[in-house]
Length: 153
Image (cartoon, rainbow, N blue to C red; front, side, top):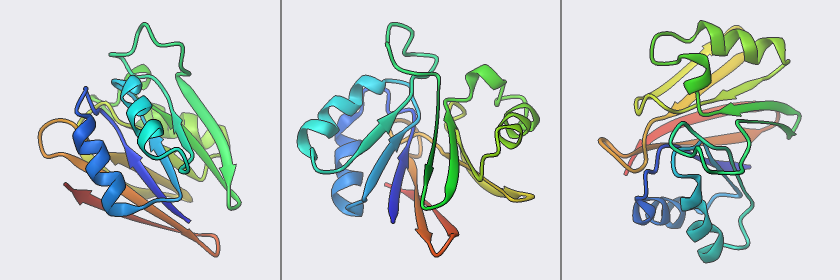
């Protein structure tokens, strides 16, 4: 399954729409900061499931701060990252994801794309799709293997 991961769109819906059109994912995940931007994606691509959480700029949103789910046998933990102080280090968010039994940790907030593997935990920050370098991540889940590709729009 191909999963598109975006974060920090900050109102730049055109960038999001371009990425969805070019990647044709089976699932879209948005990691906050203008989670309302997802409404346009859902309108244009109603056939693609979309999950989103709120970020520090989404204070009036009724969305969740954290989303956890299992897909293709992999446990996902997604959050914006501001509640874990990701701008000063990743130990808090990695420890939280590991304690929850996550296989894949997704976060944003820093606007800097990042990918690593910490033990058995895949750690991904897609960067910002709406500002700066305009980056995003594509995850491929195949036969219990997770592949991550960080891309620039």
